[in-house]
Amino acid sequence: MARKKQYVEEEVIEKAMYLFWRKGYEITSMQMLEKEMGINKFSIYASFENKDGVFLESIKCYKRKIMEITGDLKVSSGGVLAIKQFFFDFIEFSKESTLRKGCLITNAANELNEDTNPKIIVELSEFTNNIRSLFAGKLRQEENINHIEIDEKADYLVISMFGLASASRVFNDKQLHNYIKNIFKSM
Image (cartoon, rainbow, N blue to C red):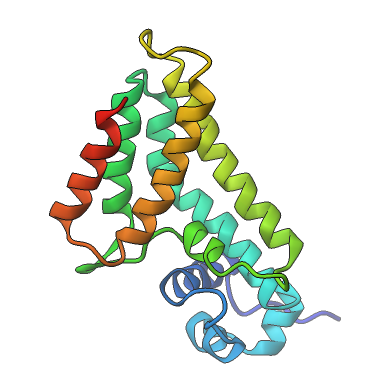
């Protein structure tokens, strides 16, 4: 007879997600996960197989969390201004006390190497492509943007978003706001 879980998976994954977000994938150890999640490694292995399994579930949790701001962008009819607002919303979303954690996806992408689990690479790419598609959709709402330029500008914006996510961990609000303003000067 299987033992009943003494924890709620969604709750322990959320704790793991915040740990990965703060510390990064590589630095986060199984011991750190045990402590943060409040469950032993046998339970982690039984539910998630390994660290990669916990991380993949953490990415899903992150996607649900960021839906707060991606959902606003998705339904907006504001075109470029909606994308700009998304950038400002993101820096608030990533805030933890007085520090920012950046973006879990960007942080993980910065750690990619030849040993990275292909499933993780697929999840990171899928997330990034979805954000890029949202940007392209908002750009299509603009009458003054040549449709040939939409892909080019969507690429520029998603790469700028990566830059913002990384920069948000180091720079102050004024610097980040200046960065965002400059991104959109050319739009």
